[in-house]
Amino acid sequence: MCVSATAARALKTVVQGILLSSEGEKLNSMNLLLYMAPIAVVLLLPATMYMEENVVGITKAFARQDFGIVWLLILNSSLAYFVNLTNFLVTKHTTALTLQVLGNAKGAVAVVVSILIFKNPVSVTGMAGYTRLLVLFFTVKLKSVVP
Image (cartoon, rainbow, N blue to C red; front, side, top):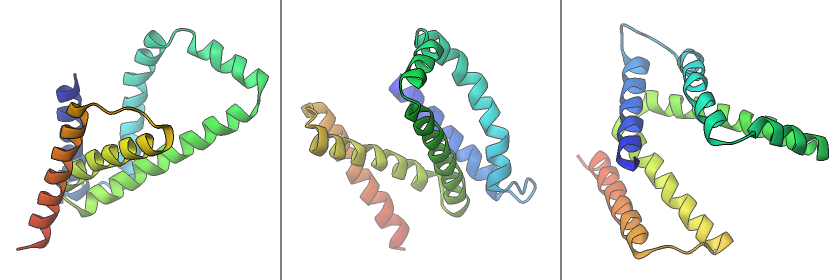
């Protein structure tokens, strides 16, 4: 599943790059986000409703207990929107490979922060994977800098 998800993410990034930089398409980042967001909702909403039992009821109960959760959900949605918009803007000005490696490096940084703040355990296999990822990241960055 992990390999499939990584391959699908890489394909999405390549298609984004083509749509944003193609002379024939000339989509801007806002329009691409406008077209991709409904597709994401159609794909993810049924999966969420199936995998998360009674998610709507639980959210309503939390909202009745503390209305602050509604503001947190609005803030979370807004931040997700701006992250996606920024992702599309970066895709337009860099290569798909660089963006993919940066996304994986972001995951490695999240793991390090999780370890430092929450003291989460990490397996040897996990550390080997993130070490390999960082080596790949610096290899790609050096190749893009050095002609």
